[in-house]
Structures are given as C-alpha cells and as structure tokens.
Length: 421
Ligand SMILES: [Zn+2]
Picture (spheres, rainbow, N blue to C red):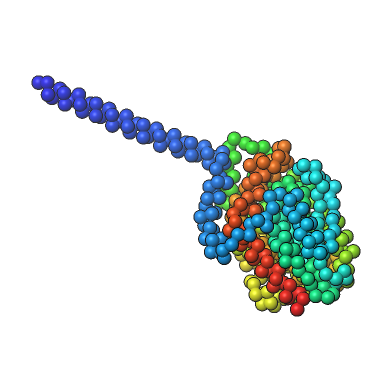
C-alpha cells in the first residue's frame, strides 16, 4: 500500500522540480531578451558592437601589410603634434611660418596653422602637402609630415617642398572634425554667391536624428539608422548627409555662410608666397573613408589627365569619389577650389589621400555623438564622445598607423619624382 503512494509523491516532486526549472529558464530567457532589447534601444553598445564587427571584417587588411611599427610618429594631441612638426622643420632647415587663429585650444593655448618651406624662395614647381583640414583627422597627415621632415628633403633648383600642418587646428585640438564655428572646412571654399545656395529637403527631414540636442533614454543610433535606410535610398541618404548643408549651424556637415578664418588666412599666405609657381601639386591627407588601412586617392585637379597621372604615380586614381566606389559621395566647396581661385593661371594637380578606419555608419555615429556633446555639453576631452571620435578617425592600432605612414610616404616619394622630373 505504501509503495504506490510513495511513487506518486516522488512523481509529484519530480514534476514540480521540472516545472520550476522550466519556469526559471523561461524567466532568465525573457529577462535576457528584455535586457538585450533595452541595451540596443538605449544605444549603449552600438559603437562597441560596430567596432568588433569592423575589426573582424578588416583586421586582415592591416595585418597583411609589411612588418615594422611606425606608430611613434603619431602624436597624442594637437599641441605635441605641432611642437614636433616645428622642431623637425627647424632641424630640416625649413623656413617656418605660422598663421594664428583667434580661438584658443582646450588649455587656453594658441592654435595655429604651421608651414614648413624647403627650397627656392621663388619656386616654379611646388609639391605642397597638407594635413588636418578636418581637425581630428589630422593625426595621420601630421605623422606622415614628421616622417618626411626627418628625411630632410632637398628639392632641385627653382623648386620647393611645402608642408602645411593642421589646416583646422581648432578641430584637431578639440577632437572634432569641424572648426571653431562648427564649419566643415572642406565644404567652405565657395567663392561665388550662387555657391552658397544649398537646400537639402532630406537633411531637413532627418535633422532630428542627425543632430539631437540631448542624450535621450531611448536613443539607438543603429535602430534609427536602419529605419531611415528602409525609408530612403542609401545613396541619396548618404549624399544628403555628407554633401554639406547651411540650414543648421549646429548640425553636422555645416558649410558656414561665408569664408572662414582659415581659408582667408591661408589663401592670403598662398597668394603672397606662391604667385610665381607654374606647376603646383597638392596632396591633402584625410582619414575615415574607405576600407581600413587602405589608401584611396582621388584626383581633383585640372592640369593632368587622371589616367596619365595614375600611370606616373603607379597608383590607382579616382576622378571623383562618387562614381567608382559605393561608399563615396559628392560635395562642393572643397579645398581644391581654393587653388583654382588663387592661381587661375597655374597648372594645379590636387590629390585627396584618404585612409579608411571604420565603416561609414560607425564614423557617422561617432560624429553625431561628439557634436551633441560639443554643442550642448562641457566639451571636456576625456568624454567618451570625444575619445570615440578620435578613435573613429585615428584608430589606436600600430598596424593601422604603420600602414598609413608607409602609404603616405610612398605617395609623397612618387609625387616628388613626378613634380621634379
Ligand atoms: Zn576628411
């Protein structure tokens, strides 16, 4: 009589234990799902997730490059980069010029565009190398320039090497892409009234997403970006965002409404020092576009046909960013317009050299977060938004830094042969 009763009890205990376990498992799963969704919805790990994916996808591109570590040429901040550039310039026997801005740096220091000149004071052929037009992107160009100066280059007679350091010193010092007026300087070189007439209906529609004023509780950049991509064609969306706008002075990719301080100062300097030049070859270094560790060269000059130039440089050259690569876009008011304006009679070849870092979506998120913090926060440099932007345009990776210097130096050497042949 006792045995069946005992079995029944045992069965009941087993059933209860199993149902308790199922209950606990279901609760754990539900909690994990809700937690995961909350984390995604608040955008807490958007950047980290993208960083892991980006490193997985592109890590091999960096590792396959030659061995060696050139990362010591990269500086930690604007002030040390400037100091090293000026010292290296003096050691190389360069004549140094300084264009000082009115706005100070984060520690109250003076900010300036610095120029190292080597060679004839009245050159006919000039190789001009510029860095930091986009502020925080300047660490790469600055490192390449330091390496160039270390070789103490000597140009032939009637020629000169000119290195221009940090065309947007405010952005480099404050870890942002834009300048002291929130202007994207590579959209600001506009010299006619009609060039300032810009209207983008789509930018208007997505301004709330691109330029939020405060950090909301539910603010997943990724979820919102996916929603926008479902609503708009990707190419049109990208063009609307990065093409430049002058409706929102605190927004991303603002062109400004007039020529900014740096274009005016630098334009005057060019006019004063390079008016006798017959052939000008410009290399303008940027980061943040393309595949990680890979160089993209775009020809934006008028003197030489792109295919001829590509043959001479021994490197592939794009005529325009938008046509040949799907992650590119078109914009006006770029740096190249300055040389056309100042030297209408001079033969000019202008090359934009881009080094890829992270995918576009990752870079855009970093830009959006930093801009919100810079416009509406206390602007401290150790804020995650500032540090993420620095990482987005200047990855803390010896392999990336080495790849940048090797390719940057190679372009400089080949351009030197071409300009002074
Ligand atoms: Zn740039």
